[in-house]
Image (cartoon, rainbow, N blue to C red; front, side, top):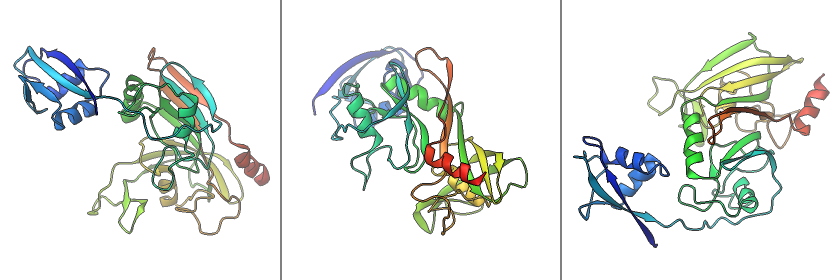
Length: 306
């Protein structure tokens, strides 16, 4: 792997090398800087330096930056529904049935493959020549999803998700009628100790690891035995809405993992749609809100219930 040498002056007395380096190289995240330090690619006086080292001030630092290499992921001309695009990001309306990025069992035919075909000249994001995945949606969840075109945009957008300033609004059709018009589900989520492929609500006293998970749920429309909900995930845990709603006693229609075994209304996907997204654009920090209507296969279910 060829390398690019970069020299910077870190004039930050008393500060840790990893933090000062991230500040000096805004195109890299602190995690990327820490990885370079761990790999021995950062030198002071020709010697590798640790990220925890405190600076005296004015040190000349040499960094061996690995060359961004083309990803092995092949571009594929898969149609994508672009809601919005600028120099920093692409906002896509994802259909159900497509995986966001390649993984075991899904090496091709993903949204990343499609975005690569649409934007073949994207700069390296995260060390690979591919669009940056800002966040994810489950395979059978439809709706709005963001891709970053450069490292700055990736960090800028992911920081908003981490700080919980992004407003995400989903629509879900569930079994049962809510006892209240609006509820807050506060239940930590972690890997199911009995099945590592699933997530589960983990009691605080359990020895299994879990993370705080919060979901605000509001009733939109009540049917005979179903409720159309507006869901606001205040955190971003894997399968959060599906796990929380099942835990609260309102499993999502069509969910073959966390829902009922026998499904009557919907097959092949679950009734969960990411219908609204509010975030700040990296280019000007302006807040923007975008929406996506229910797909026809979900709207037809509601029409049958009326």
